[in-house]
Amino acid sequence: MRHAEHVAWQRVGEEVVVVDLDTQRAMGFNPVGSLLWELIGQTDESTLAHIVAERFAVPLERSATDVRAFLSDLTARGLLEESA
Amino acid sequence: MNDPFAHAGLLGVKQRALDRAMPLSAYLELTYACTWRCLFCSNPRRHDIQRLSAAQWLPVLDDLRLLGALVVTLTGGEPLAHPEFFAIARGVRQRAMALRLFTNGSLVDRDVARALTALRPLSVELSLHGATAVTHDRTTGREGSFAATLSAIDHLQAAGATLLLKAPLTGINEGELDELLALAECRGIPIRVDPTLKPGDDGNCAPLAYGASRAGVAALYQRLAAVGQLPQTGRAAGGVNCGLGRTTVAIDPEGNVFPCMQWRHSDLGNVCDTPLTQLWRGGQRRAAATAIADQANEVLLALGEPMASFPFCPAAAVLEHGDPLAVGESFVRHASLARELRSPA
Image 1 (cartoon, rainbow over the protein chains, first blue to last red):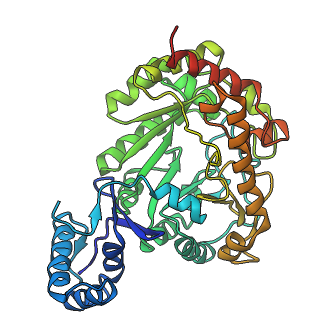
Image 2 (cartoon, each protein chain N blue to C red):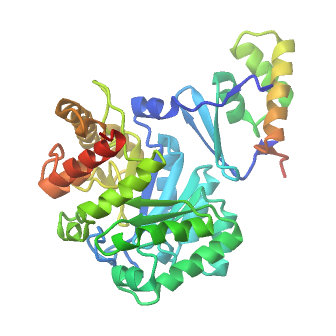
Image 3 (cartoon, each protein chain N blue to C red):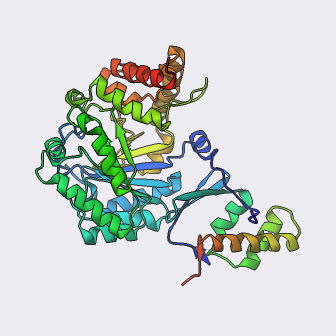
């Protein structure tokens, strides 16, 4: 997975702001989502879940569920695409 | 929403950028060369002394990314006249920043429109100076420029680009206001008509002579009032007037850095001598610019209505009056007019 080509983004303080250039819509992520966004493309889903569990002191089972939901939602919104 | 890590609101973004002095919006003047000779052009010259190449712009884009830029606007002159325009534009997108283009459209043919649109620009903003060839071409000093603009619009729309038309309201085109609005509506493109002309970047006030009449500005404001789009700003004690030196940065064709697109009173240094990150983070001159933004807010608040709620530009003030905090006659006139229309007796 990687960020879609039609996306612009930037970290502004604790939050990442993502602009979908096709729809002209912007959205912001909370600190957990922001960390995940920045790591997408660098590691796999399982590692992401471990990182969230460790950094934010949540059970791994819950972080795995939330990470999966996050990635699914971003994919559904067209903000992520398969790596080449 | 089933996304646990996202929220729809972005209300805090600008404030966070202001607090951190992150230049969310960067303006790169790629060249002063231009195919038009607009009567009220603010650029001090129409040629470059030592224009930056793409190889020189790319590290600047790296620094903009690091400093927090989200939107990079390529402007000029006519930015498409830079021989390496597309290398620079691609560089913006490769760094995950949004690309915006200010152009007169004269160099946009079908292929350029397609290449531009492939970069997925946030917007392509075209200058339109009249609803007729006579008016537009008189303003640009180039016969055929109106037809060229309409052709560019056609090519860009066919390619699927997001467009915005920008029309400075002047004494020359104010009689065509309704036709301008109709032209934009007919093509399904938003239009921004602005009666604010600024002095040249070198302080030359000659462009102001082309300003719209009071009746022309009133006609525009009446239309803006009808759709709730009169110029307005909110102020609070301890706030800032604008993003001067905080959320905007501009770089001219030779690499001189300014704390906003309009501010030419003093530069922050040159990217050929010092990395942009260093100029931005360490410079006393940027701090001085932010102090102006703070002071302007307090000055406008102290003046009360109607000035307090009308957008004020310290950069225009310093060019026109030699003092970034000077409130000029045209500002007061426009602010009063907007106030009357917001609160009809």
